[in-house]
Length: 170
Image (tube, rainbow, N blue to C red; front, side):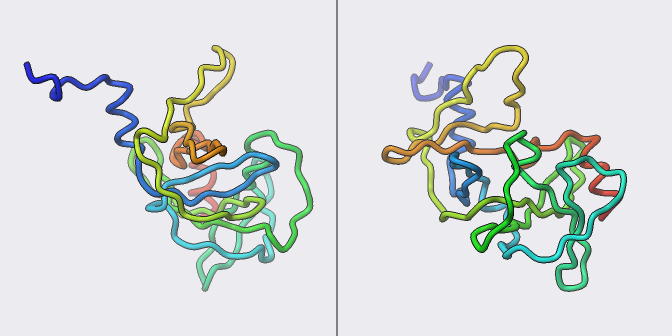
């Protein structure tokens, strides 16, 4: 059998993860999401709250006549909240549930950095943090010079039930 035809399953998964990512900051950490999921980046605008939604769902915005639900990633990841400033952005993304349904939503981040390409050599698998820690939303850890980026699977940042809440608002 050809040695090149035999791929380590962990390595083949990382090959699928390589690509371009929009990088951004939350607190003192750097994150990235696949550039193909990004629709646009806007500054903070008025967010209308929606009653009886999870605390990480900040509400909805009117984006050129379309109502878009907005999630604060600091709240979602249990990071201490802070006031929004001129660096705070809303990244409008397309995210999907496991059944394939797509939801357009905004995610609030502290600041947007740039688009970076990560090759498979630059990506390590998500760390194993024990049975009680959910890391299924992490695609991998991207390395660039002395920086490490947490590469997110935007489709797994929310559970299907949480996506259903967004669909109802949308």
